[in-house]
Length: 211
Image 1 (tube, rainbow, N blue to C red):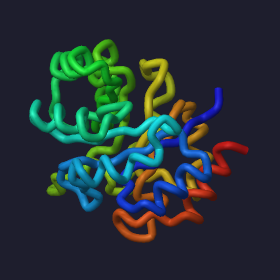
Image 2 (image 1 turned 60 degrees about the vertical axis):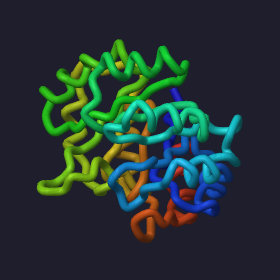
Image 3 (image 1 turned 120 degrees about the horizontal axis):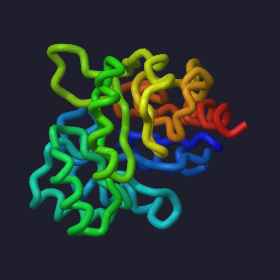
């Protein structure tokens, strides 16, 4: 199975172009959430438009209200809604049914027990995303460039399709691939500054995956 790559936290048109050019499989846009890569719904809609019908576009949310989700669906028309907050499995399933949108549930991982607990979402979301827990007292979810111990994935119960995130970059991409994760989610690892992607890093990382 070919490993896929999601480039997340996109904030600039040229970075979207680079991700498309070099063969990213998913594009992520952080919408109205606490992050250095935060976009308004309008900004996310405009920025993601060139990828529409070319590469699946993911609207990354954190504890978004029902009204905000409705506006994201209407204005951005994403292929996936990623839930990166404290959303329940029932809530995610309800959104998916109501809008016919695919869903990703991000879960903070530190131990094997966290992976086992995360599997309770497997029947309610199209894909799970395993990310490192944010450092204390940081409240922003994701984008910290930190990894959890990927060795705990070995022998753990895992869904058929999931994303691995946290500290993945061109220097450790081969180790990330060796985990067997179907999709690698990359943000800070291909940046020159928070929210500013480096096209050379995007190219290097994706080329290593696709070779």
